[in-house]
Length: 467
Image (cartoon, rainbow, N blue to C red; front, side, top):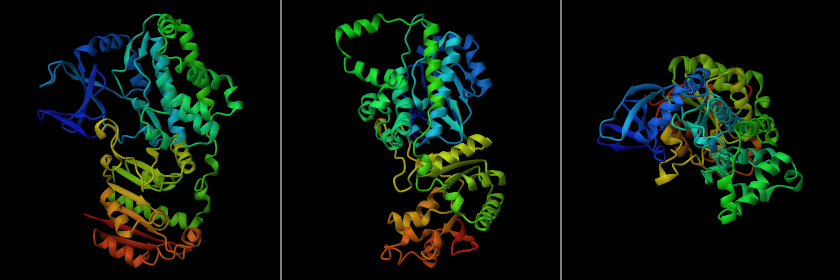
């Protein structure tokens, strides 16, 4: 839950993404996260609460905890109840998630819907934005997205679930097309007709693809016709059949695997780093974290999450790993998931990071607005920004020191053997790209705490502090 908010008499600050639901809204007060429940939402909330479902979901870790703290909110006469939730360590969005994260979020959503259905409850929608992550563990965050089940009703959220979960997953799984940029360009997800246009015949003939993508896309073209609308209005589905459909969809999504992520440019980078160098980096990161003790650390160019894990072991509270290589991120998420790490890997291009966007330009916060972090790592990033992307050193230094007051930056010079391909033919750019120039730029904005050459090459680690 972010920090961009609307002021209301100075008493609370409403979350910028919480404005659509008449049942209530999320707001910030005294550094705490709270949810107001309106007159409209109180009866469904109480009815669902009485089933015991909310307590069971919280106990299992599927739903964010809640505590009732008040029955009114000053300046809001329609509010009948106020809940308090724990603050999430970091807010992320589906267009930043690696494939495994989106799949995990989809499975959680279906698990919550299935358990709700068994309790005589339905979810009001199927938006992916109702899921957040704590490390690699997805958690459902919308306590007002539940209402009593109506006998014979269809799954109202199916279309939204497909656009925001299933279709993006299928782009990567069937076609090897990364979904993140498409998703970021259309915050409501990926339309079914657009996916259907891209599918080969062998895909269309698969039963799950035909029934969940091809056929709905054809029916969508008939929407608005009176005969079709009347038929939809009369349609009924027994609860057992609805449950069976959800179980089948869940089993299929659990089997979906990404295509092409093992062949991305940096997916296997970890294996190319000599052992002695990796150990020296790990020791430097370990000392840095033990000295700084950051609650939140951003690992820029995190690759498979190796040094983020080192930072956590040394005492970092939470690590957000950022990388633009989907294959590397896939491995980082698997690492976090398998080892239960407080590490959240996100697909972010530092030259084109997630902007503030959505309704009125603030519904989804920019990456920078969700910072700053307490500390950062940028072990092997600077040469990619300066040489491959033509970003001046002074701009890079300004970025790093603005994102975190303490950090470790790895400088990779043109003489480095592993980076030769990157520098080849770019001589006109790296004339100003020298360690001396980098240090001078850094010292204009921060204090250099420590500087250490790495064994076996020309790379140097630099620890800076703006404090």
